[in-house]
Image 1 (tube, rainbow, N blue to C red):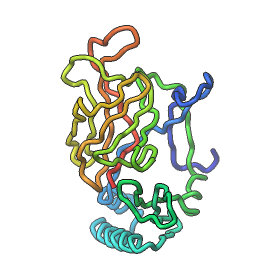
Image 2: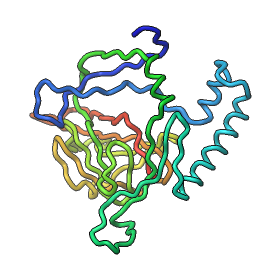
Image 3: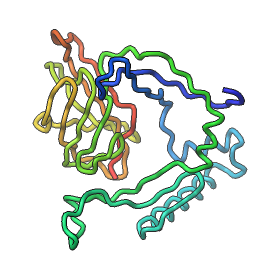
Length: 244
């Protein structure tokens, strides 16, 4: 791509969500996740900001706090870089129905804006071929909200689709975990909360996880098509999942 100054790499994976044998999904190879502090420090060090990292972080935190306050009063926010707005998910079955947290869910939705879309012109995308994998998490659905590859609702079901996911084996590492992306602390799913255990689909009850926190889903198993593996393998879902 001409005039590209950014680079994103991606692997191809067999698309297990369709019946087409020649259908591949595309998954970006992620760099590490950056928080506000790290972004501000990088901006200050590379010349992307004309104020100190601390001053930039303070201003950003204040701005986001005020944005959240206004979103909670039903205002939409359009920064040019992204648009944010509150949305209620679910269905009302009668004209006089009231909001029910067990049936409906309130979420904030974010969409890329025109300024962020312009940045795409400067990105070179490179496909690295078909990934060599012994297991795959292709999609994660939070059943309560219907959110795909995004949200987690503690105490409710999570549907995990992919390949070679079945929980099997006696190794102590075998199981399903949520890793806190900020603290690296691990929360293990109780084996009794594994509702469906198939090679292509797992359904689990999401454990009690801290709100406002992002987690990485990890599935460790000794499952193989013909026999158990001697050593367990861990399948990691690269997309962060967040408890609202």
